[in-house]
Length: 296
Image (tube, rainbow, N blue to C red; front, side):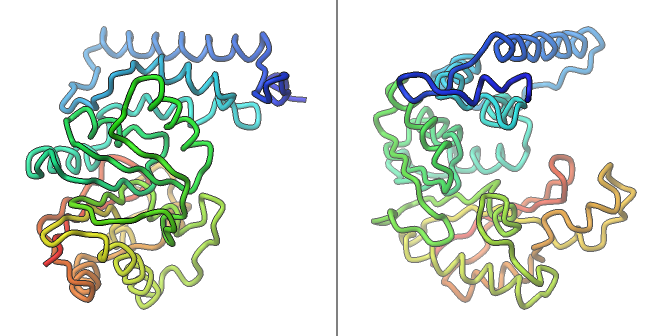
């Protein structure tokens, strides 16, 4: 049995009950993280903060919420639910998307965040002053955490519901902004309990997938509204595998990839046009491009 097996037991309230070893593991993780941050600071290697992810809760308050919901461990290991709140400003494409929205969209905008996870992006946009921010995610546990944070920290202008973001059933009305970042390329690989795409290297399959996604969300956009989508860039098809630690394994990581020409073609077929695009090769397993698309 795992040393964290106590995290699989339930108390009378139906919540996960943690044992001493679980709390010691969390304490050890936090101490080691603190020491690593301190060492980087001393050595002058601490990353300069370029962009602030806003929230009215601290990282530790968020983590405490995850612990309270019994989601701090998965299979005996500290879960990504727990560590997700450490992301901060590390992802350049997330920063780019959020900065674009804050700079260019009116605060009255109604925003839909697809694949919202535990709500980090939704809460940031809410704290930026946007009046209505809606989050959807296929993972029930993510929405449980997001709703708990919403209740505890009074994010009254946010709404979270469980939904399949490829085939949404709960989305209604029109939006000035729709976000599809972090999740699309991962979901195509079946990483959220959904079916993995076959023939992911076939350009026709790739275009079909993107066309279907745009066809779902374009009708929910207001005229001149924007959709921001993050995709694995097809430049990864030609990447020298020794360029990254994953080496040969990288050939199969997020293998649904798109060229800018494919994105432009699929967007145009659904009444969308590319306003901006940005490529990132410094973060994540593969080069990714975020596209800002406007509905004509």
